[in-house]
Length: 325
Image (cartoon, rainbow, N blue to C red):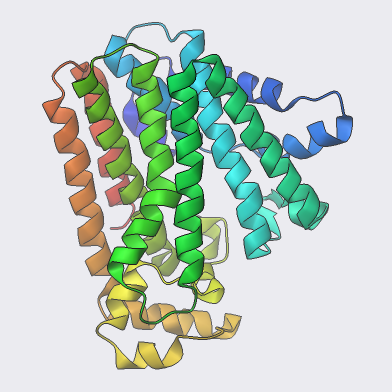
């Protein structure tokens, strides 16, 4: 089941179809090759969680039954294009061969093509944001900067068994939560809400993004490859020590002896088991629950938002935590 099913918002599927049409139009180009490469991951599909947040935030402001105008769809497309552009770049960094069940752009064509296509998607996202006004354009630009900051911080700590929780949390705040926060904020910005409501939507997106990333990192250590759609334990092989691993390293000398360098594929399952045995998953789940609680508290305090929509947003957050049970 898609995480978006928890929202229970009538008409959301129709709104997301408009997002799909907007994305296809955004990546179309007179150069057939550029259009093919830029549209590669658009065609592969995805959860579209970030544009859905833009739509849901707008409907929370205007009412559950309110029509979603073109500016909301444009804002949703802009944040999804940023996300897709970052994936093109991530796959080059990770030397990934697949993405969303299809061959990655770097594997099918080349690293150079993937980098340039990712840049093209970021440029198109910026064009769309600029069409919504200088404030939205500035917000998206600063968010792209935050994505880069978070990714660079993560890269600085690859294969580092002394990786601290604060550095991990700062990295995911940049590389994941910032775009969630922006997705929600744009929904409020194009709806013309007051500053307090805008701040609430932004904080909700930020806490949701933190929860989402921590849950994703937990699943990398607890779920199987078929469930994940990518190799289980891939972060360990890439030297990315996430919160469950960091917490386990604080407790397990055996784990510390196994990490700090290259991990072979045949070692991954044993290391994942050590992380679980040391209680790293439980520690990370507690932090994810704390972020979920903050997200829902923010919603409950935003009295200007439609409760029929915010109830669904609460269910979305709770559904993320349920995935770790």
